[in-house]
Amino acid sequence: MTRTGGFQDDDFWTEFHDFLFSEQRYRQAEELLDTSPLLALPGGSRVLDLCCGPGVFTVPLARRGHRVTGVDLSPAMLDRARKRSADTGAEVTYVRADAREYRAPGAFDVVLNMFTSFGYFEDPADNARVLRTMHTCLAPGGTLVLDLAGKELLAGRVTPPKVVRRGEDLLVQTDTVLDAWARLRSEWVLVRGERVTRATLTWFVYSAVELRRMAEEAGFGQVEIFGGFDGRPYDENAERLVLRAVRGG
Image (cartoon, rainbow, N blue to C red):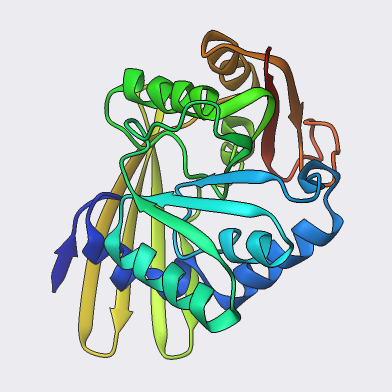
């Protein structure tokens, strides 16, 4: 049995890659970019994909003519993103950096943070710093789109444990609520033949009200909350918590 660390452990991203980033997820990104009113970006936009992973959105954005920078802390994920870019002929700038520390003041028209890539730092103040990074990197009038699983949605999905098969591999995910719904701990067990790999992730979960307040405290205005990339309301029919906000002039 082997054990990996949290999201800052490159072994985690390598071991669990096929479950985190299935081909279905890449197809979903392409579909969202073609259909979502929240992702209908002006042509040639300067886009920062913060926590870009293996380029799920980074590559198709570049192929649509946007000037894209992908930032991630994981060398393994950036290697996969670079390969995907090379294979498709997409021109992307990739930077290895901590989301709390990356700085490119006013350099982007759009900042994206997709697929629940927010809230993983142990100190809540560090998660607030990431929002300030996003604000700093936007040009005046620029737009942030931040997508995650909202606390309200997670409340109905915590139990029972989730079991996912991919070929001969089996993943069991067990979630536990911590600190009166401030955080969630997710324990993953991957069975691959005779090899068993365990990992534990703990992250802060946010309601729509909490995330809106954090965005406003980071300096954003015109903060809107949606229940999906189709622009639906954030209500009992919501699928995701999608925040869209603007950096003022």
